[in-house]
Length: 375
Image (cartoon, rainbow, N blue to C red; front, side):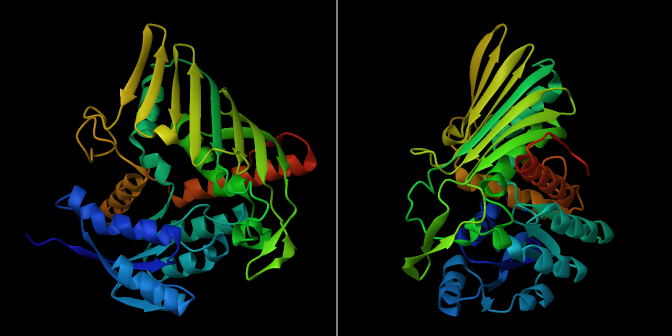
């Protein structure tokens, strides 16, 4: 069987670069025949010794310390931008203008102004673009979307989301780029909270207004390379938000990296007139469904589910990595077969709207007032 190939150029070799590379390599095994087999052509990074090792480990034929070489390469059809937030805008826009399809890590931009430029570039081009909101591809999240859409919960009253880790509890955690506003844009609200905001929009629809408070608990942290010196943290450490939805429901959102014992606690709860849904990322294969006629624990994978192809038989557990396999398959299928990114994938429009909400949350916290979402 002859299967089409699609050339992949990777920007970044750290955690997301590694995770995405895994998905490119393994996706055809789950989706055979795949829409196209990813051809890992070239990977970019700044530290050549680590870059060379990553290229060999991940399976890329070539590597470069110049990201423009990836964007301009005739062997690259898809540019995967897994770089830090301050390197999302320029390489992504240049790739789009060079006729490359672009998958960009979240948040789309450091702020809504950057995200708008990226969204506008995508609108003008004929290529496919997607934001890597991988949690959309958790079967439980898709099932929650389907249950809400079907009306089985009736009128929605509440949406309650929390995303907690304990990553910053240690005061000796170094001053990495995610703690610097000029590089990250904001703190956990965009790093973790953007996922929670995206799932809220994915399942319930648009947000109309927000009211928020933020805190920075540790103002200085050891410098990388010289832990005897400290530098100033310039982003928030935790955020609490009241969210109003266009459908009339009321929500709350808590984001923090100061929750001892939590590793990747991405959870949501939806309460409606006929029942409730509850999900916890640390129990990724379960969705709790409480209804007036009783309660059920839906176990995934589920052979009856639509919207995502089943990777394993029912009862055989999925994990974090499978969310990226589904994401990569969805994007490549959209490219090769000219399918829409929405509603299951997150478009650059979704990424822009997400950044508008994050900006509004930060503005609300700064000004101490309710902010209406204006796109």
